[in-house]
Length: 498
Image 1 (tube, helix red, strand yellow):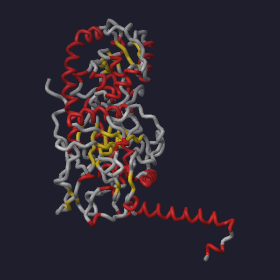
Image 2: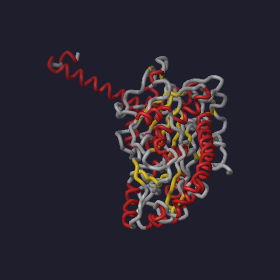
Image 3: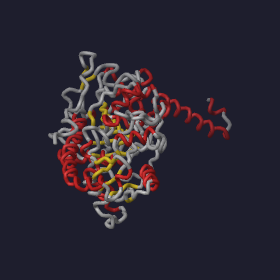
């Protein structure tokens, strides 16, 4: 009746406005009651609302493309079977920071459910990799290849390089809610068996705030609050989430734990100290073989070299000032570690560790570093800085030899250390010492790396084995409200007896 009274020329606008209003109400309803958004929504490829969907990824997915996901997968309430009492809890009523969906509103256990890695029944592993660092991407590829291939399991990896836009690392509460509002299928455990967040851990905020109902690995490689320095809400969120039954925190250097405790009052529960294996994935090997690189055959294997980086350029100016011959400058990216295999590499560290450190050690590269005394002097003079405390520098002192890979007491036997710039001159007493001891040092590094690779792969394998395949699982209500004991990896010491 009312519609008939509307002038013809205004009916089109009326219909459009009504459609917008209905759409808005449905959207609002799905946001407050998220399970509504999942019923009867088959997903056959990557979710479409992905920031920067056209971004080129350097490394290909492992074995099978993401479109391998079957059309028969229909998302239903995060696709995690639940007891009746846990099906209709609006997100707004959840304690976002302190509660896992396995703990609230009812404590759940998946005891007896199929494990994520089941040798008796191997199934493809669907992984969402949230990361924008090529070195971390290679590491995840390599680890999954090494861990899964012996089990006959393939990995389908979907990539997400940003939460809002590229190089936006300060993920706020508002950004996180908006992202989850538009991309909640990422939390569908029938589509993604595990989410791996690497490098920039603030990218995990949407998944943790929404108590994402799938397995999550946080691979911390550069301060857990990078981009949201000192944000108390994020610190509280990460501290709580590190103890959730479906979350595993893995750190690739010891400083992460000390930094979180000492400077952020965030006593994270860490599943395992898991430094980079240094293994090159099949995709990375193909890329490095196809990239043109500078011919270094004119540089003797007994000569000191250094990459063309900012810190090394400062070192070059020091050499010029002292009228001392500096190491030969070579391109930083020159066919990867294979391009500098068995070289003597002078390095001025700029981070507590790097992904390339163990890649190079795997290829026989011997590192020549400033001693802890010399580097601390340079830091105190403001010449160099390591990103240690977040936005500000760190006057390291004894912390350098306790937590930083380049100078850790237990790792020092892997490196050579010079005490002054003149030590780097060809023919110096230090140069002769390096050449004299290089063979024994390289053998020591080789033995260490065998242990190192095995230990880190063991940590990843145990992390994946500790999860259940939630899409095939049936939850049981824990009789006690007390959570299960927090999982930790059972690994040998980081450094073997040598």
